[in-house]
Image 1 (cartoon, helix red, strand yellow):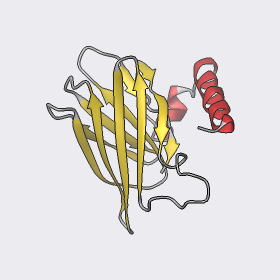
Image 2 (cartoon, rainbow, N blue to C red):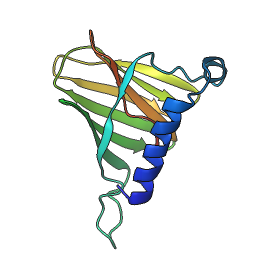
Image 3 (cartoon, rainbow, N blue to C red):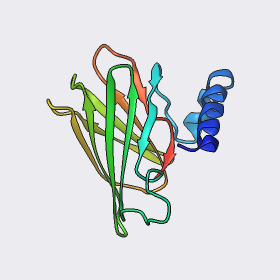
Image 4 (cartoon, rainbow, N blue to C red):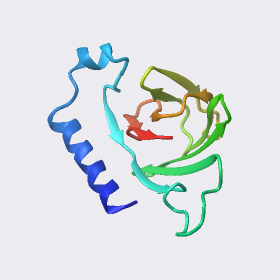
Length: 146
């Protein structure tokens, strides 16, 4: 992470707490926020971990998020002309699903018994992943751009 990105993330979190988007406006924009959630901290991102002077690895990006003892690993692969394929692993596995959201829609992917999920042909642009596990608050990555 860069100091600027860290500052922007902290500012976004404060604004979400002190002045959240009114539900009727969020619904009109197609945004359905989770009712109770815990933010996942962005711990690694291959898009910012590439050494200086070296180009990125191509159409793939890996990210890791964490909250408490839960980690969420994501691999986002760009499929030319079709969108983004998301493959993820939630650890420890507890069942449930992952809601993949973008400004104009969303997709629910079930978690398998190991904690894997997959979402194909997600549009590029702003994305958010919300992990929903039985008996636990939702965990959300917050919005980021792919």
